[in-house]
Amino acid sequence: MDEFARIEGYFAPLTAASALGLRDDAALMEDGALVVTKDCMVAGVHFIGDEDPALIARKLLRVNLSDLAAMGASPTQYMLGLIAPRDTPSAWFADFTRGLAEDQALFNITLLGGDTTATPGPLCLSLTAFGKTHGRVLRREGARVGDAIYATGSIGDAALGLAMLRGELPADASLVARYHLPEPRLHVAQHLHGIATSCMDISDGLLQDMGHIARLNHVAAVIEAEALPLSPTARALLGQDISLLERIVSGGDDYELLFTAPQDAADAMARLRIQSGVAITRIGHVVEGEGVTLVDTEGMEIPVARKGYRHF
Ligand code: ADP
Ligand code: MG
Image (tube, rainbow, N blue to C red; front, side, top):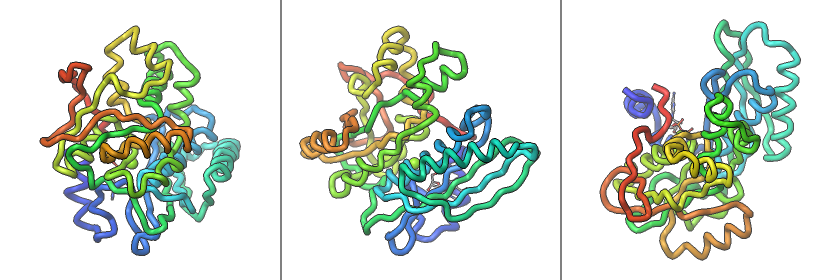
């Protein structure tokens, strides 16, 4: 049973309507005035462990902010769960909270409470973030046949950055930074209400995450490899080694928005691109059928063995 089957089989039956079937990036509270999301990070799984604690803290907060962005909500408050090895020094906490303070100021969010315990195991972090919605949320549900598929920013940088940290590729500071410090696309998301037909954030790989939207809406997605927004470094690396394409489309940790919009929204997207200063790229389209296909310029399928990250 994979992670998704477990969520659907064991946890979804415990929920009420406001949890949106556990099929979205966050759940609703207060009749949709608020949304709430939780993401956990474990040393050795989501980060290496010996990073600057301030960076770990900021990533923890930002991956949650990215889920708020996916819902089109604005951050308000968060709760922190910290399960730390007993011998964690005070200096670690000082650095960790310095990172939180920095991003609290950047994203206009404050700490509401939490829990701190010691563990014989690795450092585990949990953060629950609340956001306000002004009554409108973006959902994964709603993509229609004929819609265009868009992604913000660039895809694959973080996955390549992680490969660099593991010594599998020559290091490039900008890509490593993209792994350590995702950029939640809150400002873009707030302008997608009424335009995007579905929206989520990419955390576990573009193809796998697109698969969630496709399955939920009983449609298929065609992603054009040539259209993918790549950073100059990612493009150069791909030019040297085409096999890196798989890491780019399935590596995860992008924390970019992935959304669908009708074909006639192209002008609105061009305006939003200028207004936000964030790249918004049409990467494919929605068709009848099921699944996600990566295609080349001739429309031929590019086989991808692994479409995303799976915990189980
Ligand atoms: P994301 O990558 O956007 O954070 P996840 O894949 O982690 O989303 O989770 C998908 C959905 O499943 C979300 O709605 C989340 O709240 C829910 N979920 C995941 N794990 C649990 C759990 N242990 N209990 C209840 N809900 C869960
Ligand atoms: Mg998400």
